[in-house]
Image 1 (tube, rainbow, N blue to C red):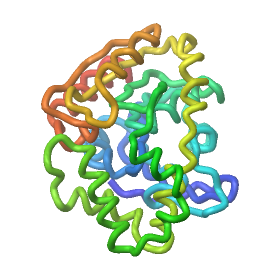
Image 2 (cartoon, helix red, strand yellow):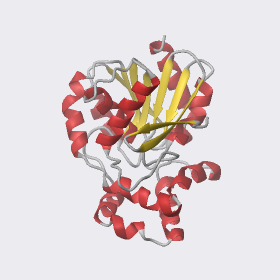
Image 3 (cartoon, rainbow, N blue to C red):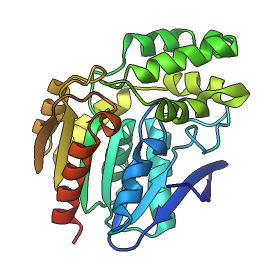
Image 4 (cartoon, rainbow, N blue to C red):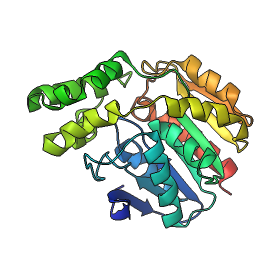
Length: 273
């Protein structure tokens, strides 16, 4: 599914797309990814639902202006504004990685209501941040000036490490591409440098107010965020179920497409009526 529209917000251009008709379903991506992680799922579910995809500012096909913040706070504000632009009042939201914290903050801090929420291997509560994240946060400007071929190798290795199985070459290419070139390279390190765990601490303190139906889904072999973190998150949410998926890593969309599709389908059948 392609992103064919643009939403202008606070000087940013947010790329988004819509397909299908029926109850609204919004997919949120994480970092360092883009809506591409959900594009095949969106195409499949567009036969039954009105499916929305978007690239967060600073990611994918959206603008990557150096002067614009790309932290959790800015992304949650952008998502809340985008939901208003779409005119969606209670969509079903499915979020992965960083998108989980963004969706939760849009709801808990900006008053957006969702019909239900599926959180798939999400960044949502502390602690978070890999050794690579901490290294980049200490040297963002230096890394932004790496020779292009070295930077590309770094991004390829980093994204590849999110999958439990080898990513098909075509899928790896589409995830790496937005981070290359004179605009993409500094944007890659900028979004890591602005990663601020204080937003996650604030989210965690507010989770008791998230009474909507929630399904936390976690890959058993997630090397980025341990499954125990997912289990703890589920325990903090008042109205939730928790499911693990075997033989899959953080990029569960590619490692276990059949299992994830079945889980999404069953969830939406139950909550998007």
